[in-house]
Length: 96
Image 1 (cartoon, helix red, strand yellow):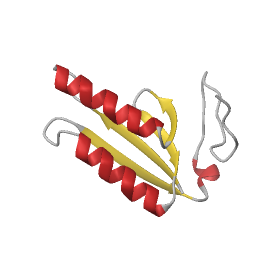
Image 2: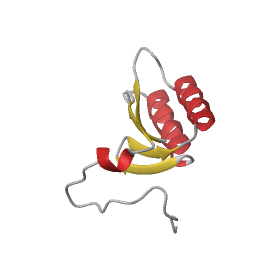
Image 3: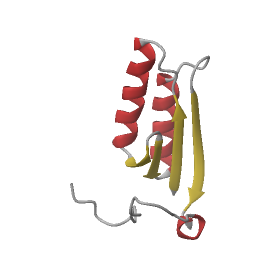
């Protein structure tokens, strides 16, 4: 299933900047960054729960926000892209 993950981390102090980097690094391990604090991740149910637990353990519940949007397996009809960055297919091979 395709999961859209968004986060807003308070970076007013060094601890917040560290949380921001750690959350971004964890998301990179599971998906593709599509905007500054937005990732698209193609996950199975076990991977989703694992990633959710990891990210929830990293945030400060008093200062930060974390959202998961479950777009499911038929996500192609649910995504429209406009603008400068080219879209990608998460099921295709990604060459780095």
